[in-house]
Image 1 (cartoon, rainbow, N blue to C red):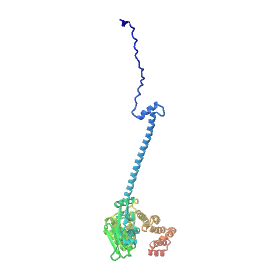
Image 2 (image 1 turned 135 degrees about the vertical axis):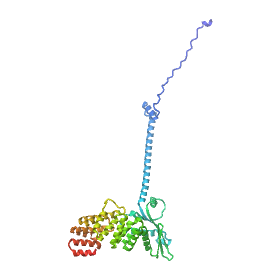
Image 3 (image 1 turned 90 degrees about the vertical axis):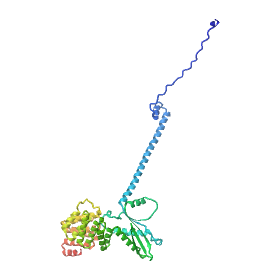
Image 4 (image 1 turned 45 degrees about the vertical axis):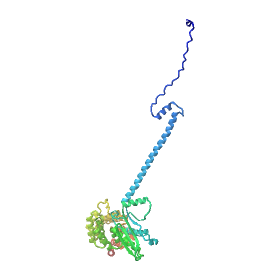
Length: 442
């Protein structure tokens, strides 16, 4: 009861904790790309040193390096491509040069030490031989194109000295041996038991030895060079013999090549033999062999020139007129078997002769004048000057003919050229006695 009368105990207050402020979660990124995230954050934070701006600045720096690296890679690739193209170009040029070129290479000879001490070294002997061979070729004037020779030396003539290392020249030489048409000569000089000299030369598998006294080295080199020229260049050798005044040897060499040489040599040798016969006064024989050359090769222009020369010498004007017109056919077609200079002389000469046969001497003089502007070939340019004077005189332009005769006098001293000129001038002024006298000189 007493408990009921006691006042109630005060109510116990509940302690209330302050409510914590909960921030709203940041919005989720709209893109997984870090740069785009930084750009979005940077828009909401204008501070110049914000984390987002630092990320963007660093990314820009890295991007510049990446672009520069890519550009450098492209440049390096371009340089590598240029280097490859340049290398291929060099190799291609060497290959093309090798395929197109021809050469005569004389290797340094072997010589005894005693001779080498006296200055007669292997290189010196090879140089002497090379000089003779080069001179022979320079003295051989022919209409035949160099590319038609099995062994042509028009590209390069040199003495080869063994060396060390590898250079562009060495690579060129190696490629040359495998690609170009190359004539290689080697040999040795030795003492004979009698104290004289023995010179041996080799071209391919063919060897030749000549002997003489100790003081006859030049004669031995001459003999060896002639033998090499004869064996490797039989056509040119025959032409060279003729130019040296050795007509009998020249005809024998050319006839042998025409009758017994390789089939590919026949048109050239037959026409060459015809030319030599005509020079020796055998006009009918010249015509016969020239016609045979045309039978072997109807498109061989040189043989047609020989036919026309023989017909003119025989006085067969009508046949000659037909031949001159054949020579002038297809004026734009080049015969690869003859040089362009010789071909131009042949065509212009045929045109001039055709007009002479038709009585058009002024026209003939015009064609002769054009021939005087060409490069020399076997005396044709000099002959054209004489012919120009003759045709000008026959066209009754005596004043011009005399002017040309005075102009060309230094090169027309030979009787074979001056006599026709003097005869034509005498005929033009009506001095028949002088014309007859000059005619006997021709």
